[in-house]
Length: 423
Image (cartoon, rainbow, N blue to C red; front, top):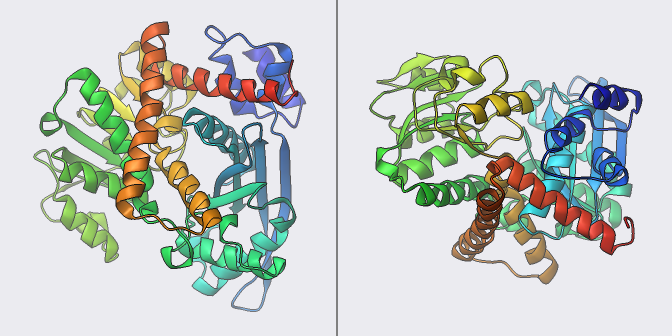
C-alpha cells in the first residue's frame, strides 16, 4: 500500500483514491501491470478557469474540472457539482466510480465527473446562471452527445442543466437536448428523473431484504442528508412501511424513536422550513445520527462520512450508500469485520445514471416515456445488476462491494481488450 501511494504521489496523473481502492481488491482480482495502470489513470483530465460576472459588476474566477476517466464502453457520463470543497482528486475519484457504476449496471457509457470550486449558496440566481453558462463555454469543445454527457450533482439541478443545454445549443447553432441529462421534462428531460436515484436504491434494498427474509415494517431507518436523494428515499420508504426514525441535513438532524412524520417533513423541506423546527422530534447532530441504533443506515450526503474514527460505533446492520463514497476503504474493513452489510454506492445509487441513460435514449429517438415505463425499466435494469452481484458475492464469498467492483472492472477490461487497447 505504501509503495502504491508513494508512486501515486510521484505520478501526477494517477487517481490516488482509485489506487487505494484497487489495492483493497488485490486478494480477489489479479491485474497485469498494464491493466492496473489503465485503471489508475484517467484517460483525460481538464482543468480550467470559470470566469463569472457578479451582480456587483466584478468578475470572479473559479477553478473548474472535468475528468473523463474511461470510455471503453461508450461516451463518458457523469455529473457536475458546484461546491466550495471541490478539488481535482475528488473529481478523479468520482469519475472512476462513475465508470464502475455504468459498467456494473450494463450501460453503454464510460465514467466522467466535473465540478467548480465555488459556494453557490451565497450567489444570486443570476450569478448561478452565469456560472453554469460559463462552465459550458469553457468545456464545449470536449463534451458532446457522443463524447461526454454531463448531468446534475451536488448543488446543480434541472434548472442548471437547462441553462447548460441552452448555452451549448447556442454555441453549436442547433438545439441539442442529448448533450445534458437531468433537464426539465418540458425541455426533453425524462419523467421520473427527480426520484430515480432514490427509487433505484429502494429497489436494491428490497431485493436484499428478500434475500435476508426481513420485513419492512419491523425495520428502523436512519437517513443522513435530506436533499433530493435523502428526502425522496425517506418518503418512499415511509410509504412502503419502513419506520424512518431520524433524518438530517447539513445543519443537523431530528430523531423520534417511534418514527418521524416524514410527509410533514417533506412538505416543510419544500417550504424552506428548517428540520430543527420539526414538532415532536429530538434535535441531534450528524455525528450522533450516524451512530444511532437502527437496522438500516442510509448516508445520502457527501463523501467520507464513515471513517476509521466512527466506523466501530456504527450500529446499523445494513448500510445503503446513496451518497458517492460515503465510507472510506479503511472504514469498510472495520464494518466488514463487525458483520455489517454495505450496499456499495456504485450499485445502490445507480438509479440516477440509469434514468439519465433513458433520457439520452429518449432524446436521440425523439420519444418521451411515461413515468410508469421509466420506473418499470429502472427496476428491471437495477435489480438484474443486483442479482448478478449477489451471485458473485455468494459464489466467490465476496462482500457486496468487492463483488460489484470485480464485475464492473472485468467488464471494462473486456471492452478494452475488444477495442485492442489491451492484449
